[in-house]
Image (cartoon, rainbow, N blue to C red):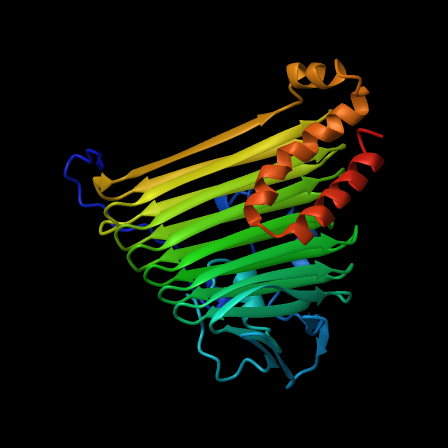
Amino acid sequence: MSNEVTLNNVAAPAPTRLKSTNIADFPMPQAREEAWRFTPIERLEELLTEELTGGSPKYSFAGKDLELGSSADHGGILAELKEPLGLAPLSDAPFDRAGAAGWNNIEQTLNLTVEGDNPEILFVDISAEAKAMVGHVRVRALPNSHAIVVLRHTGGGTLNETVEIKAEDGAKLDVVSLQDWDTGAKHVATHEITLGREAEVKHGVITLGGDVVRIGMGAQLPEEHADLNLLGLYFTDAGQHQEHRLFIEHVASSSKSRVTYKGALQGQAAHAVWVGDVGIGPQAYGTDSYELNRNLVLGKGPRVDSVPNLEIHNGQIEGAGHASATGRFDDEQLFYLMSRGIDPVEAKRLVVKAFYAELLNEMEIPQLTDHVLELVDSHLSEGSLK
């Protein structure tokens, strides 16, 4: 049975925001702007200029290095590294200065086309070592196809990246973006997701390492019975800034979205930001949406900013809600472990891993689970639990 929401008969417009490929439409951000007030703009300024001259990152698909003009076919997934000219966009125009700057400086596009059922997990390696590099990845799942794609980012450079994801009617697509950066890396990314009728998209973000990482995501559900699941995991160390911003637009009726992001922070000046916006349009009857952000603070020094938002523009939805929580270790949980002979440091380590485990299991990529937990363990060994 639907939950009836009374809106006093006010005909509200659908939620919108400025979208443009013209960088002039987005002046250089100022700290007072809502969309940038948590971001250390001065540390990212080189990736927000009109000209980004660092070239393209290196791409490897299923273990094969790709050069401009080359292609590789693995199962039912075709990978092509080509110039962007002539490629029709898979998404709307960029929604901020970072996205417009990247869009106007793309030199190479990694185009992934999914056809048929592909149960094997496909890994794409993206290496950025130079300054002011620009990346562009397109993942298009044709009708009724299925694939699992992992984008692994490594290196110590600076990267402005655009990722376009489109699941056409009936497609089922899982895409995980792993940010496994060196200490000094800087990364701004724009992820645009579009779902067709009865399409299912599971999108994961795992952010580890780097100096500053800011990932902005826009997701559109313009067709009926679309299902979107956004999963995020981040570990923010001393001095690091990690920011994740989401904007979901429910346009058609009977669509569903779930958002679950979890982060742990340790060390002085560790700063994590999560902003989740969900808009339910006037025709998006029967929408079912929920977003959750949880943060675990390991000791003194970190800062967390968590801002969930919800806009509802019709009175006939299944449900919509959000929750945000930030806390420290649960003393009872630690006492339980220590009462069974586990020393305090190891008990805290187990709690942190368990905090992430449910989310990693939901991503359903075993190779990634083991790797991420090893990385988290190494961060803990070097930080507050050493």
